[in-house]
Image (tube, rainbow, N blue to C red; front, top):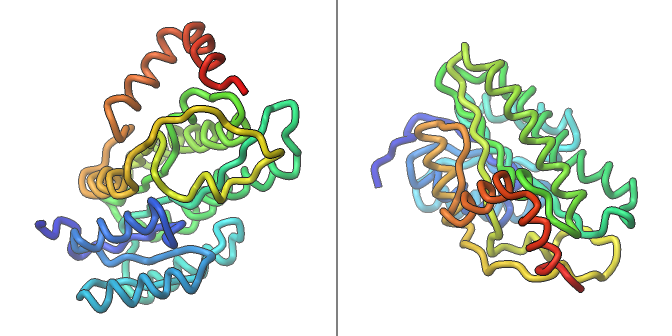
Amino acid sequence: MEETLKGKAAVVTGASGGIGEATVRALVHRGAAVVLAARAEEKVRFLEREVVAAGGQALAVKTDVMDRTSVQTMVEQTMEEFGSLDILVNNAGLGLSGRVAELRPGDIRYLFEVNMVGPLHCVQAALPHMPRGGRIINVSSVVGKRAIPKVGGYCATKFALNAISDALRVEVADRGITVTSIYPGTTRTAFREHSRRTKDEERGWRPRGVSPEKVAGKIACAAERGGRDVYITLADRLFVTGTILLPGLTDWALRLLMKD
């Protein structure tokens, strides 16, 4: 593959597994130098060694996106190591299952800290160093466009991230920086297993989903070309379009699919 991102430095949060790890590999494959930012230091150190051994450029930095100081330190290390910060992929995120009537306020606050305030910290730390042509890529979800039962709290955080992305996109346009929202549907990762739960409820039927590598490929394309809204599959795009055009029918269908 052509090294379309050679000379670019990228930060990927949540790089220790799933979509984040796959995104690191996709960006390195295209020639980017990549900072692996995550709380799981041992995992990102292992990935760093693997990338470097294969001839790529990588730097693992233990990072807690909820901690502004931790994020600022990560950005400073990025600049010291690579001299630029051209691409920011806000991928770190956490799930939460539970009916709205049973959600615990503490869980909701924590989720917003990870899924919305965390990306905000990263954007605010990165922007002063980002040149013209920079890319900010926020990993949202199709359920950030249409909330579904039993994950309403999680959906709310992705709606909020979309709002931040839409405002930021206009605010930085004159600087030549693009802001892309990525909308995966179900992805075959351990995300669901790591999610918080209010009870031991089953979330109901869900599609099999796509591989993290497929999502990472879309993220890498956004790093190359920018763009506004990126869906992973045609089915994801059709789901969102259908919920906008036929919200009542969507409610009815979800009631059938999400029954206990």
